[in-house]
Amino acid sequence: MMRDAENDHGLPQFPGREPQEMLETTLASRPPGDLWVFGYGSLIWNPEVRHNEVRPARVWGWRRTLRMWSRINRGTDEQPGLVFALMAGGSCSGIALRVPQEHAERELHQLWKREMPRAVYDPRWLPTRTPQGVVQALAFTLAPSSPSYTGALDDAQLLSILRTCRGRYGTTYDYVARTARALRDIGIRDAEIERIMRLAEQHRLDCEA
Image 1 (cartoon, rainbow, N blue to C red):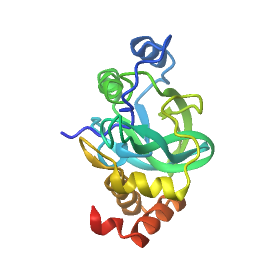
Image 2: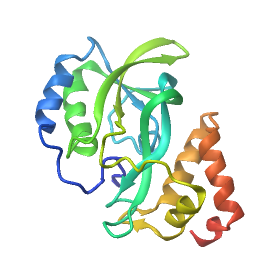
Image 3: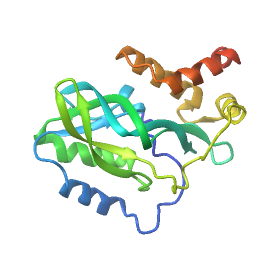
């Protein structure tokens, strides 16, 4: 199955950030019961997690933003592409994946291999609102201090990346378009993603993909 995790930045592991130690810390702080995972990017349309329920979900205090370099899956070292990150500020609508308690530890280990091989993210248990109530869901967040954070990008830079950058799983445009479709399928229209899609269509990138 195709892997398209956000954590493919291609940079060395952060000093002092050992993935296994971070996993153990996350496991130790895991809320009792079933495991919940918040999906905001490729986890929506390619979860690769054994789950028994999917709920529409929203987190407050965090926003989805196309501000993370991708040097493997959606780009290269010479021409890095982009993937979504969850960063502080605003709110974000996505999904909550429910993993049965008996499978939680095994699935979390698998998820770690996908999202945390170089420990770029700050994993957090976030209060996540769903139609059935609030759950504590694991979310992979990105700090502005991360070398994988792009900083501000203007539309000209964004268009250049959308047009030219390609990695082992395709282009940033394809990644954004898949996420846009997946969100629309569950009734979510992310204003920034829709703006990017309109920008791409205006410059006919949809015809080039």
